[in-house]
Length: 546
Ligand code: PEP
Ligand code: MG
Image (cartoon, rainbow, N blue to C red; front, side, top):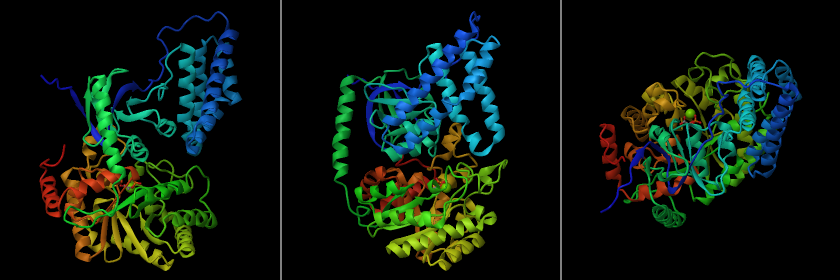
């Protein structure tokens, strides 16, 4: 008799299969309801300060040991907060008023938390780091497990409520086999990180809350299925089968095409200069989305034209003749910049973000286009440029005219707002190409914040209403004889890719780790089958879907 393991179901957001033991993300420590009496205020202060110093040292050691520069920066910045002498002062004041060590830490940190929040902008963004130091110090004082990503000797499957940016940046991909989150959506930090690290991931899996530490599970990041209660033998056989599949995948190369030879460009999304190297590694045809925000983050002023030229030149050279689609700065909403975005917008996702920031600060866009044109001329690279968050034909014309004036000959726009999809044919009178940002298009079509884990099912890229808008955009492209790609996270799904092709999309841009699976998925179906799958998906029938 075959014993079938129970299955949990979430949303698969980064493909790959792996099996291993669960490690639960350390919860935030809780101060016990009963506050102990304090006999010696000095001793409480000394204990609290010793714990704070221990945390600072631990963060510094991890910063020195970690390989990724961004992770080291985050850890160093957090350690600096723990070393701030005013925290020590705050702790002494609280213990002098009779607070036990852990409570004194809480009170001192609360005070600084409010100060940072009042200062706003960059300082307010540091509150998350302060909370991290507070939780770690309190956990140490109370003898509770450290919050955050657990440290284990053997690799594990990380199960968390959701991951904060600081957790994601310091995650060690050597130790983590897969990510499973109870909340989080297809466009959450977890999903984006998992894809960039090539880790299988399942999000929005409410049932995962019942998983226990050490339990053996198998995670399928394409279908979103988690098999629980498996045996050690099944762990070994699952991982062995996946290893063989990966080896076959590593040999996958060549341009994207369906079984009957219909060409589909497979491109890579990158977010910095380092990402450019991945394009050749996975034998992709180029970059379909170069997010340029990283150049502007953590700064008080925009980068100079010279600084930008140097960076773009480095990236363009790395393309080795392949095409690169550069997206101009997309500041605002989930990526606010103090020098561009207005403070206190009630609905920043509906506010001054993306191309709209150029209404207030046209020079920032002009400088970026000038720098891109200079780097393009210096390298002779094949550069396409596009603007994010375009809503109207006037915006599309304004942007593409400006880019052309700067000497950037191929200028397009992103379709991320339903208005743009509905008017795709009109946009294409000015735009040389369109690129569909399904992360935002889903958010604005279904009226769901893209970071809202609780409503993740509504952000599912299989939603027929979203597919309708993709179809309309792709059809407009076919009629105009212009390229229409998808560069949102939906393009990385090997199950959805044939549907997108069936809808008429001409290119798919995704994280490098997804290229081989998508290439294989397309090679397994004919164009007619893609069209049939698309018709089923549009009709809301789930054929072809797990
Ligand atoms: C999108 O919205 O789908 C997209 C690619 O842009 P971003 O995720 O950077 O907003
Ligand atoms: Mg977007």
